[in-house]
Length: 89
Image (tube, rainbow, N blue to C red; front, side, top):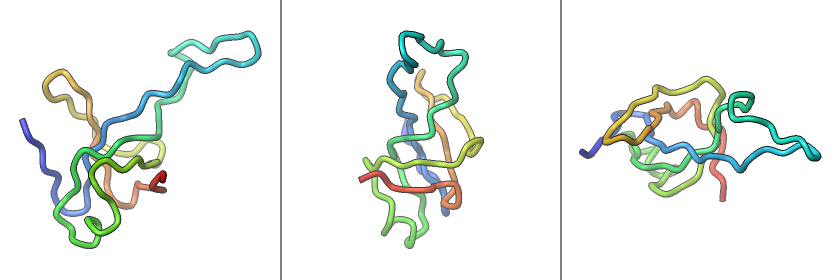
């Protein structure tokens, strides 16, 4: 199934962070924050947004932003342009 976000929205797939370790203490998954870095899967129809954000870019997005969806057993997030804080280059 192909998903095409509309307007100023971006479809992203979260990038899982490495196992967190503080000294010799391993922090369990339940104590970790959700990842805030993601890979862009699709960009909405807004032309200005398409000039700045491309498929394959890695982005950092705001905490608690976006709508989670599940397609073909994969989890994605749809975030708005205002929730994108930076493009990681």
